[in-house]
Every structure is written in structure tokens, then in C-alpha cells.
Length: 302
Image 1 (tube, rainbow, N blue to C red):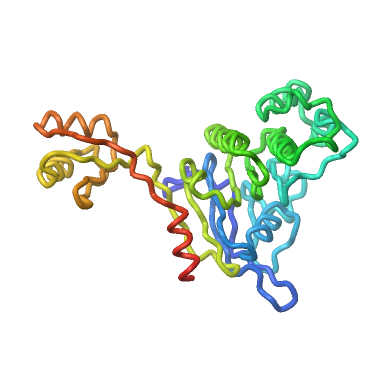
Image 2: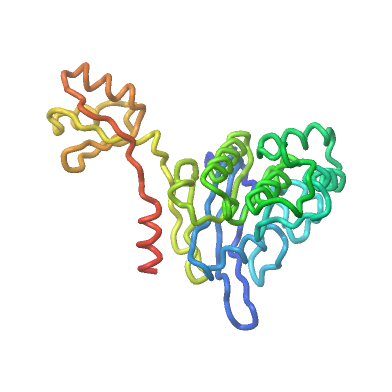
């Protein structure tokens, strides 16, 4: 941990800019990500998302600024830095169409010097629900199967930083849910996850921060509190209930919104405290922040 309490950064984007000719595509974009953090990039087409991801993964060079991965410049550190990176850029990922999914992953494992490759390949094929097509040529895969194989390749070598450009594009609802589940698991294991997405309502359940790009600039950054920590309560005597909640040490925040109280804290202890104080608790629901509506408003007014 650093002196200010944050973990050491796995990924740091420092004042990154990109010019094509005289036209700025990105200007002064900066953010820092810690181990286990999930960061989503959102923005309309042409906002610079894919250009930024290409620079973060070392596929394009910034005109200004730099990208650090585990403290090293990704454009100067070579394989020693990039071996910690797993990425899918401009999906679906490119594979040898005449080789099977398993054979494509075997080649990637060989190139990365992955130990225990056969077992790890079986594991990621099972995780991405590709076992039944693992020994079929990739040229016959559906778009969704190629998308999932791309994610399997990205996590194959157990990276510390995972960067994905629209990882759920072309997937059916079950496939989208599966990808979100895997990204949650990766973050829980300490992997830093950066993704670009249009599926804001889906990712808001597990994303830590959302960066909103507009006209090549990071126009806003939203810190997601998590619905599991914030709840709406409909109770008897809301003013008196609010006064009680504001005295409790385990309640981080409580405020009245109309006829309900919005409270941040352990909901089981909150409800028990109100009941013990003689209140009737009629309803408890998660208080969801509508990230999509907020995004639309910011883009409209940018």
C-alpha cells in the first residue's frame, strides 16, 4: 500500500494524447488502476475509446504522455512488461481459421512459455463453455464462439492486467452474462480489468469506476458505490428513523428522499436497529444508480 492508502498501480495512463496529422483524437487522458479494480470506458462512436485501448496495449504510440504497466512504460519495456497483459482489441480476435480452438490456444501457450499449458487450456475452454467445439476448426465458429475464444486467449496466461475492447459485442444474453461473470472473477483474483462497453447498466453492478470519453477527452469519471451497500427503506416515521440512523457508527450515510430513506451501510444491521427502536420497516430495496441515464446526460451536455 502507498502512503495515501491506495494499492500500487498496475496500470497508469498519464496525460495521453494522440494526433493524426493535426487532428487531435485524444487529449490529456489520465487515470490510474489498482489490482482488482474494474474500470469501464464509455463514449459515443468516434470518442477515442479504441484508439486509447490500442495505446494502452502497445499497439499504437501516443503523441504525448505515457502508459505504465506495473511501473514500466509499455512502449519501452518489451516482453518483460507485456507478459503481464491479456487483451482483446477490435474483437473478434484473430485466430488461424484452419486450426482448432485448442490448437490456437496451444500456439499462444507455447509463445508465452506457459507452464502446465494443457491443463490451463482445458480450464479456460471449460470456463468459456467451448469444450464441445474445442477440436473444431475456428473457421466454423460462430461470432459469439470466436468472441469467447478471444477472452479465453486473453486470460490464458493469467495476466495481471486485462484489457478488452467491447468484449460482449455479438454475444447473446447468456454469453453476455457469462463474460460479466468471468470479469468479476478475474477482478476478485486481483487482476486489473479495463474494458470499453456500451452495456453500462450491466457493468454497473461490478465496475468500480467508469470513465466517460467525449471528443477525445475524459469528460467525467464516475465512482460506483455498489448497489449492495446502498438501500432504500420505506419505514414508519421517516424523520425519526433518519435521526436514529445518523447516530449509528456503522451507517456511512443516510438521507431522506421523499417518503423513503436512502442509507449506505450493512442493511441487516440497519433494519435491526430500526426495529429495535420501534419502527415498522415496510420495504427494503437496493438503490441502483442509473449509469446509462447519467452517461446520456453527460454526453448530451458535453
